[in-house]
Image (tube, rainbow, N blue to C red; front, side):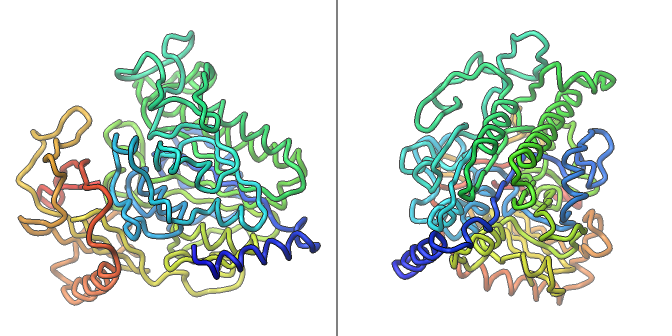
Amino acid sequence: MSCFLRISLILVTFLICFSSIADERPNIVVILADDLGIGDVGAYGGEAIHTPHIDQLAKEGILFEQAYASHPVCSPSRAGMITGRYQQRHGWEYNPAMRVLESGMQTDQTTIAEVLSDVGYHTAMIGKWHLGHQPQYHPLSRGFAEFFGVLSGGSLFIDPSQVGVESIGKLPRQRNATNGVYDGFDLVKVDKYLTDVFTNKAEHLILNSDDKPFFLYLSHTTPHTPLQATEEYLAPYGHIKNPAARIYAAMVASLDRSVGVVVKALHEAGKLDNTLVVFSSDNGCAGYIRVCSNAPFAGYKRYHNEGGIRVPLVMRWGDKLKPQSYKSMVSQLDFMATFAQIAGSPYRTEDSVSLIDYLIERDDPPHEYLYWRSAPTQVIRNNRWKLIRYAKTHLNESNLDEARRVTPPADGWPTSAPLGYLTLLYDLEIDPGENVNLATEHPQIVQRLSAQFEHWNKSLPDRALLPGVRSTVTKIDGEWVQLIF
């Protein structure tokens, strides 16, 4: 953050502290799911799993019909969201995998927590971080005054040997320093179901908050693998015979309960009407578990098709935001500018747009274009058209391991496409399911979008901090393509 901007933030904080504005600024609560399919939320048409609390939040607030994560996998998606900048700008382009134990999101990147802390907010994070284990990358070093959660990409939800617990797949017998639960910098023992533990921590924080505005980032690990659920959440889904589907439904139910508990706590604390409550997911659901839904969209987590990047997004803010379905495309990158505006901070980034005026009075769309890159994959969309370029590959289904990944070369995957690209063009106005490739019929649109993508791409660093080591392959339009993430 520049010295000028830092001085501006300090001045804003001084003015707020000595004016009547302080008590009027809203609290901000972000509840983020992990790998939740948009088709598994009732408000978005899901029928298999009951999500009454999320649905009620959508009914009382704004349901975004075209909301996007900035990446189709967890860590880079979160890096974009928490900084309000395309993660490629600061090098966090790929899933770091186990390299996250030694590396992390660059420390010169400003987070939402830092911006809000600088203008007098109490900042707390509960749940999954996934942006670095080392002290300099830790949430307490990135603007959060409190942290309780996991630093890695996931963790056991509960000891699988406990009575009433159902689990799928091979599970570690216990947590360790890598996948364990931390209270600040201290590793702690947790026996109860992790989703409930995070929820209870959030409830306690809200009920014991003072008059100082707060920012709570409740970043759940559910319904990410490992698939585990307790009897309480499994009971309503006993009719589902497929064990994985039953457990996944129960995990989504635990997430929905969490939303209900948080909203109830805000109401009991007398803070609900003056709190911006945001619910979303970090990316689409994971097709490799075979029991979740991104319907009606194509693709899953790891894909840059709509199923991988289009996410549920709901915002509720008392009578400040009129309940509605909002049709224009928005990005989780926009959280930064939106939160900064309502908190009274002048901080902005080149990629984040404050949605407040668009939601209240403006009719024009917040973005002309949105972009994605997980090199060599290239994606751009405008209000109507979406262009995807996937790298062709000689690999196929036989090259996938149990996790449906391909073993990478020692120095990571190339960022180019030696065998060329499969070019896909979709008209999202009439084909949101991306069923019909129109690239051949509309070469001028392909050319125009490609040129716009290249203009954006040239503004980015040439290399990521870490090479891409995670990838899978899939067949689209009869061609095998490689998805590097």
